[in-house]
Image (tube, rainbow, N blue to C red; front, side):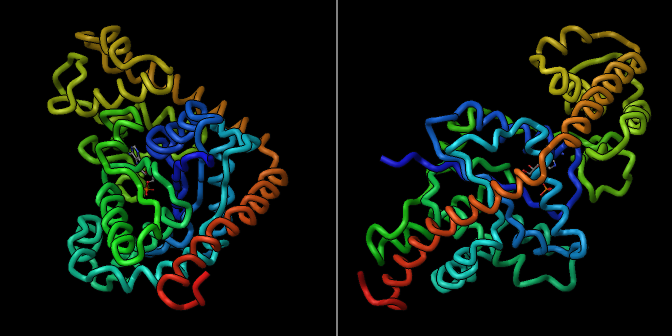
Length: 343
Ligand code: AMP
């Protein structure tokens, strides 16, 4: 019997930062290690999703390859036989299935998507792509019959939408799609009750991101280790003069404790009890600056060693293999809806 599919992706429109690394890349690498041999892992770059919001198109292509290298430097084993890496736009079935599924999706349900509402609220020219991307995401999942789709909180509604759409199609055309598991099971599968959320160093009420107003709050993976350490030393804390893990009252200090635990690979509780009640924020910042400096030095050395040619070869051969799988699903759908003669 074929293995159940885990599908996961990371957009490549931005240069990656520490939040992406700790919140998305590392969990993906850990997932590969945990499930080696038991599941098939589809790790794709959703490049078509990259411009649902405006981007610098001249950088997209290179950024995709650069980000893939970060995965390898972070420990992704590209030689593992059940791991497939591919770029979404290289497999045309994603776009083709999206059109068909568009015609089975309702305007009302897409209008209710929280991400769409959030991202469109302050924009004048809202693209149809932003409105429509949950359907493209449904195609990404349904083409490979992926049961497991580990996503952050913001994408959970879209996994539910994929299930609704898949089941709707199955009611009309029995057995057409394998639908992903529901969100409760997805959370259980991911084995994490709470997703990691790294905050901006300057404004710890906001998450670390490339779009926050103050770039000194974001550590990018291409920052020099020295510059990154300086950003940590300038992090916003508070005036309580007591170190406690408390997101409500001390988000800046708590964010530093979180980064310290994750980068030194220690349980959060252990790090908290080591620092609990101490008063020197400077000492805490120095400890975090040290681990950040070491982390970037190590990652950048590993990045320099990634074999680009081997990675591109793997990418291209996986794109051929996954095109075959996706085309088979697409053909079944085309036959079901009457675009191709029945099997
Ligand atoms: P984005 O570039 O915002 O689309 O994020 C890509 C991935 O990185 C998503 O899976 C996010 O959950 C993760 N991510 C982005 N920012 C953070 C952050 N500050 N802390 C933790 N994870 C993050």
